[in-house]
Image (cartoon, rainbow, N blue to C red; front, side, top):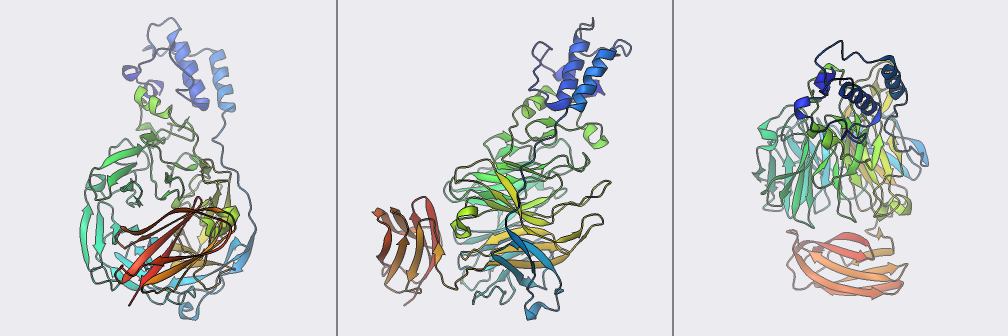
Length: 559
């Protein structure tokens, strides 16, 4: 076993250069002690060829036993309860035949929960709002992206419209510069709505040959567009539980036109959730860890994606704790090379660690519309474990909140249940939903997709929804009127603090068509007149920057 663990032909260090940073935790101590003994037991080789000579003395066995007994598992992020209450899931009359009315969920005290869409969905995964404010859902099994308009904002989908069809295994949907992008296991489609009727009648392959054109293993592809740097990030999960492989278990980066592919991070078994931090613009991701290391190993991580970063898979987890290689699947990784050890030595503590096998899905940052306490944090859907050993202890099946104390914070202070109660028996298990996708709107509503148990979309609605287009911001509030408009608009600002204000208007291609330079405004009410008479009819996005916070609002121009 030891000869397979350490490959002498690839081991570039002698015991003089061996360092406890190379192998961390109890396995580190064991390897260090064994190397020390076999290097200095009279042999000139690190690994003796003589089984008798390799028999360690009693004192070495005792030291190894101590090392095992003092092993410390990776430290999980603290779990804190936020103020929650148990509510019945509201079922609109139109969905009563599709959903039982006796379900409850535990959510923050200022939220209620109801069905946004039930029926007609097969396996709804990720969601995104179009530039016109319509929720779109990628249905993996149906091969369709459905549009679900809610014109009266009553929290119930008016209809379920096939916006684009003909996909296979589609997981993610994103809108970027006038087009809709849909991911499949080996390619990404670019879809266009040429007549602006909400149906994307034209589609073309945008990126192909993802994952070497292989569909096995973890086949979902999550996309994140970085408008600031004109880039696209794509996660490509592993083909297996644990194995050595190329072009899998990575995050890729492309130019926004789909060219210039390069790998920016490795050792990431399956990053289903990815999102850009709204202030720092850093890419964050979560990870689905490997199986068969026990009920609590490895913990799932949530972290910043660093350039050329290595994140442990398939050798280690946390900040450098090695896996137990006694399991047959993990033995296939042996021998461990000096290159493997050097990679593991680069691991740093992730921003957050949560319970193993929680199966994190969507990762979604919040903003100021969620209030002072939550505005810097994020939500992550936990689809839930598929297996467990005795005693059975299934976990996940909920949405959690991760708390960051400021816009620049890179360590999660605590995690809390944000929407729980989908699993009603953690031993058998019994569940009625598995959360996957998350989307939020400008009113602070949270949309959650479930792809198993019940295939549906839930909406969490805060109590203080006013029914107007006003959006809360850190320094005050902003309102645009008239909207729709023809020649001029007024941007009404009610500033609680004196701050710099910058305003830009963009068309649907992302082109900036009006720019109002930064100006210092005192606290109080301000009405800023903006001439839009030279713009053509259509939908625009108004971006209002107050201090370090950005609010985007839709503007419709008509004659």
